[in-house]
Amino acid sequence: MTKSKYSKSFLLKLYQQMLEIRLFEESLIEPILSGEIKTPCHLYTGEEAVAVGVCAALNKKDYAFGNHRSHGHYLAKGGDLKALMSEIFGKSTGCSRGRGGSMHIIDKKAGFLGATPIIAGTVPLAVGTALALKIKKKNRLTVTFFGDGATAEGVISEAFNFSALHKLPILFICENNLYATHMPITESLANPKIYLQPKTYGIKSVRADGNDVIKVFETAKKMITQIKKHKGPAFIEFLTYRMRGHVGPDDNIQGTHTDIRKSREIEVWKKRDPIKKMEKFLIKNKFLDQSKIKKNYQKINKKIEQAKTFSRHSPYPKKNELLKYVFKK
Image (tube, rainbow, N blue to C red):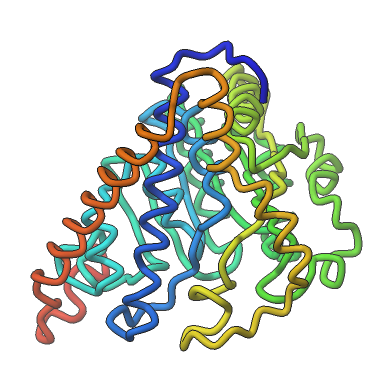
């Protein structure tokens, strides 16, 4: 990243959103390891630039769908942080009233229409939403976030075909962190160049750096502009890396290190940390200094601690209301 063509306020907002997601995720580690948090948590640490860059390119009324690793998507789309924390703590004040846990989160007011742990499970829901937007002639679009492992699912091909056939307003975002759960994608995909898959359906598709938030924003903005000109769906494969385990802090929810990834590979990706990269860029452009960085950390950590306190003092759902709110009447 060199000298910026964007305003200081816009760039600082991108940075602060990424930092908020990072500190939120890292704040969960101690209560996960102590057993206070029961729900399995797939931490988004390391992939923040994708959610923040893409959501910055959306309008507030556009929709987004997530997956099992979606705390970052929820927050970047404008979801309520306190309600997310409460949901992860299993409390009735959570965004899914304590019934969903980490992987079933939603904030309809923010346009985040849901996440589920079923691999590629929300992709057809996003396609259906895009179809509804087209039928109702709304000048809005739907984004669906999924991982590289999802691209081996059959429903992805069906989604590409249907959305291309009907020129639906949908943006497919593949966050390629190189592993499908614990399996390297080179062992699960015949061709790891994922962005080539949708091209066979005539869908405009590119691969880009997912650890550079400005490049993510620009790539997404370009695709969104095309979609809103009624040119049909688009696909972006963002190369990124999770700095924590597949589930929990280090691939074992009990805290024993079982990460199969090579330590050298992890070290290489640590040097591409999207937040450190953005800090360096902002300092170089004199938009940020060490004093302001420290204040940002303190301010965000305070907000997160307040959310934890709120969550810990919130009640669990009542046993006699177990099925209440689960099914729409």
